[in-house]
Length: 90
Image (tube, rainbow, N blue to C red; front, side, top):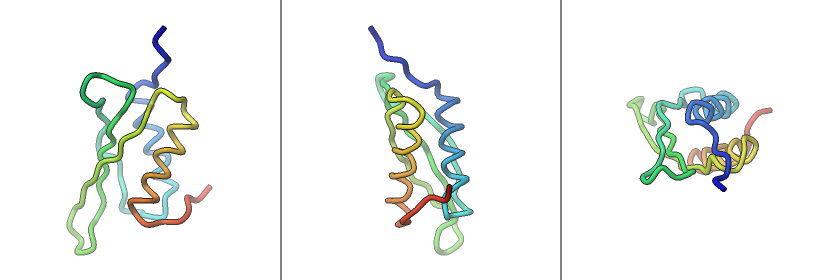
């Protein structure tokens, strides 16, 4: 039996909500794509203004098969690590 996997539009909405609570106002979710093979993993394309004011992009990967709370926590942890932040505002 195949486990329930969150729809891509829901994943993007969750990522946008996580980003809204980050301590980086220039951060934005610009896309969400299923990884090769159509697995439960998704790649979220992020954008923000770089140190020189130029656009900077990066990708975070997350498992969308573990439910909304697990996905939210995984995205937040990866963004904090990438941005060097210590917390996400509640």
